[in-house]
Length: 96
Image (cartoon, rainbow, N blue to C red; front, top):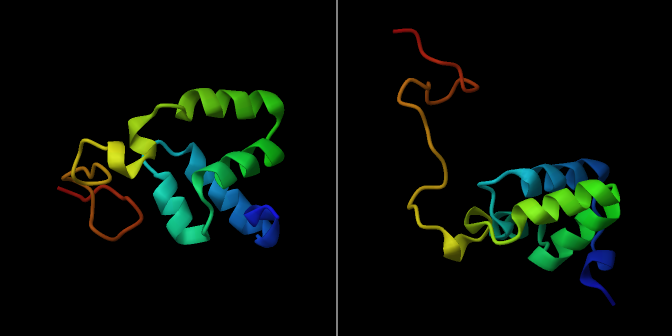
């Protein structure tokens, strides 16, 4: 039995997984931690939920991308943060 078929995901969860899979700096490990789906299960979900052309474009973009795999990352922190960005205010730029 395929492990993804045994997992029941809501439409909101599926949308969020697709969004995270498209993001360059969100690793497959982060998706697995949050939703319990391994990389191959994410690929299968993307294949099932997306149009064939969109899926091919995504696979071409993701394949071999170092930022999608925790072990291949060469930087210490997960994302860049502008020095002018407020710490907690929906990414608003602080007044000077």
